[in-house]
Image (cartoon, rainbow over all chains, first blue to last red):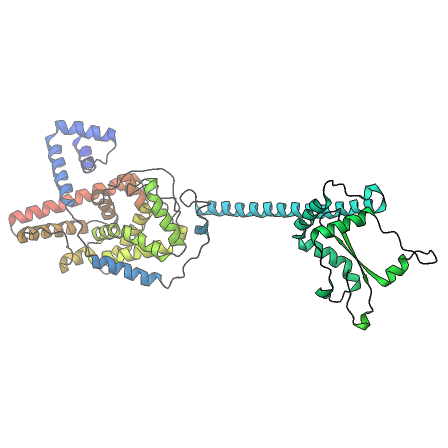
Length: 267
Length: 222
């Protein structure tokens, strides 16, 4: 390289802005050229002089004024409400761009909905299977009298079954629903609580057990005819299927003419 | 000291593409708090945006003052810079370098103000020199030294005023703010070769201005 070419590179050489290869060429040329060396010195002095251009120490009031002015300008602008930062824990902003975070959040929500739906579906399916199985069992036990009608459970009837009743009694909704389903055709009038028979759970279990063990013989009249027809005519039959498929509560109550306005007495 | 390029991914930016540099020399861990502030500011949190202003206002005003040479213009430039940032926060990707984006906007704002002043046939530097409003530096206690210092600062400002808008931006970022040539190119949205050309030209002009002043001062008072 000659001096003309080197002179063009010297301004960059003093600021170390040349590529290593070019810088090496300039350095080698400067070793043998006093004129270019002098020019380099002048550029270095000029650059150092420029770098004395100090930044002033601004008064704090300038910064306060700047922030006040900015807040005044920004205040009228509608704040951009975004729900995205609320889910920062799920998709940290510093790890992925905004559009990625939206995709992650949308996917998470969709997955949550799918899983919830599946769980609800499974629970409903199980719930609908249980009564069907219970009804099927009851139908079998009803149609086959004798020892098979006896509950399969062994042990103290007054304890296990009472516990079962107590535990099932918490599930009020299904019992009420079944009760309502049975009673719907008769449009029951309100029942006075004074007329309700109060029994303990163990008593009720004993009663039910004895009923199942000794099925009620179909009543007959003096003529030996079946009294079912008469009973159905005069009595209101209310059946309640408990959660335990082996236990069904049956009430017989005398039918009362609704025009008379009297209450139904339940026994 | 700014200067380290941390990665090479480009970031999307409403003003224009800017590189991936960590202009403040910060690491990813150090930029995490600013990323969180940006996310909060995007959601309309004025306190978070105030924190962003607090942490960057000195850098922005210093750059604007060096570019424009006038305190009032520097404050106007800083205000406009932060306003543009606020308006475009939703377009900024918090995973990218905020300082690079900030400097890019600040330089663009200073260029706009520079052009505006030029249309009025007076640059801020010239106006500052003429009005005596230019220099508010850290002055030495000695009055005589302070006067010499102020005179020198005014001369440098006048030397910078002889540069074109692009040369001035390039030399301020390279020699006064301390960015590398590649970083300056990314801030200015041009190639490193173009920036080198602008820096070369600017240094030659400043050297020429200084020599003229030295010759004149040898002959007599300016």
